[in-house]
Length: 231
Image (cartoon, rainbow, N blue to C red; front, side):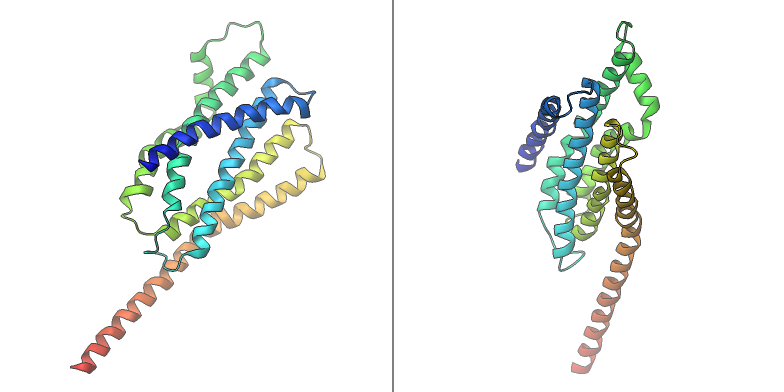
């Protein structure tokens, strides 16, 4: 039941954050169109979700005492909360596509089917990821792994650490700051964090498990030897 409450909270949190961000931007970025403010808000909420997931993952990864058996409920709790983000993001991508088409052709007769078709061709992998991950990924996180491997799931959450930098890159691009020092610095940080959190984290997980398996095997053999000595 707690999972349902968290999922419902996410259904309110992500859209509300987007609405508030879009509203307050008109006082900050006075010279950009609504469609651009909407797109910036999409990136802003994406960064919020990524920061939350990364914080949960980092906390669990750093405090796990047993990489297979140590249970930390915050992982499953955030999975329930973050599940709503995937549905929210598909809707927002469609609205953003519609606004973009309308902005480019204000007098044109725009059909929702055309917008969806164009959006799906352009972002097919992202849309399929957002639609299928809740179907297969959520049960895997909450049930199929049988309460084991919180450490490894936390490491997967760390993949999201590069997303805020990716979002900032898109926001700076919308603001016409591609040649700024901030844009270049963010690009370097994005490449660095991406390398560690989306590439090297997987060999690191294999290394951690190999050490864990080796230790478990050694302890098992020691128990056998000790038992034989007692006989």
